[in-house]
Image 1 (cartoon, helix red, strand yellow):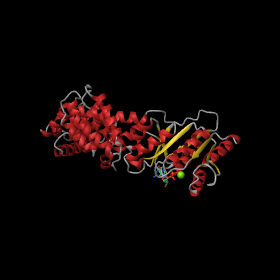
Image 2 (spheres, protein in one colour):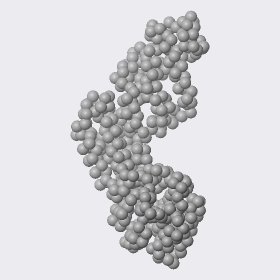
Image 3 (cartoon, protein in one colour):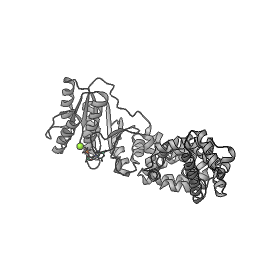
Image 4 (cartoon, helix red, strand yellow):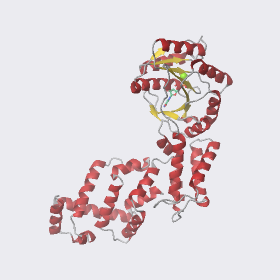
Length: 441
Ligand code: GDP
Ligand code: MG
């Protein structure tokens, strides 16, 4: 994965203080590969890499981050900013009925999304919504819209394959006006590929109803072709937004970047299931992580930087190796974990495969235990913390009383400490810190 490959490269950059042409070249090549693998179109990738390079070069690297980690941060931020620019909400600020025109290729998800939007507008914005199908090529398409509109609890305006698309749309608009609908959603025909007749038809539809929103519906699985689709529709129509569908599939969703770049229109919604409620406001941050194939690793890098002094982590690793890991270090490590938002907060940020390894652990309980353990260690003298082997029965009783716990709990802590010591030795030092460092780069 990209994370693995970047991690390896990042390691080679330790000790360098700045992002330079030479130290980022290999990393940018990896980022470029990752974007191409996510099906971002080549010209879009080139542009993007250039922008990242301009932003990154010569930048001082903050705190304990190395240039590689800093670059990953810049890439992620730029990707999220590019995909997230613009207003993600629907603009309905017009004399009602506000018309929303749905455009896109056949199978992109226009009809499904029309119904999802109807439901969202009814439930979240208390609108009175009418839908109509101008897809006169497939009688089944009109029935499909009728069915899903019913599921959404919206009203449907009847049309027939014998009518002209513009006439259908005009009649629906007229009906919407007379019956005081707030919103009219116009579903349209798509083709399997771009053709001039389709473009002329949707242009005519646009001219007939003056939509306040013209949404391009794009299948996230479409990959490289998304660029051509987006270009053709942008030339035909003044697009106001994009809906990216089928993000519940395994596509990395690079189409988002391509389509956003080609059309300049904001990505407003993401389709995340076939079901009527499977529509979400597009989350650019999250999607950037998906395109890069690296979970929320950037947030983790930032938090590691905030909460942990990597140099002290290194000292700790060395101590473990030399057998000098004592209860003071144990306590430091516990408080470091707390600084980073606790165990569960940390787990949220790890990429899936790592978080899964920790699955099944009862996080709330673990955090409670951590707090108690800290209390017990605090009740020890500095000497006892350095030499836990001194802690025999009478000292245990004193410590237990001081921490307000039972003697058994002191025993348990000492056992856990021993176990952890053993485990960390096996991991060849560093324990959690070492793992964090690997995550960060
Ligand atoms: P249209 O030709 O553009 O109107 O596309 P449809 O709305 O008929 O959708 C085509 C297929 O894609 C249907 O089987 C839908 O159920 C499916 N679909 C649409 N949106 C989504 C989505 O967000 N996720 C999934 N999994 N399927 C979707
Ligand atoms: Mg359809």
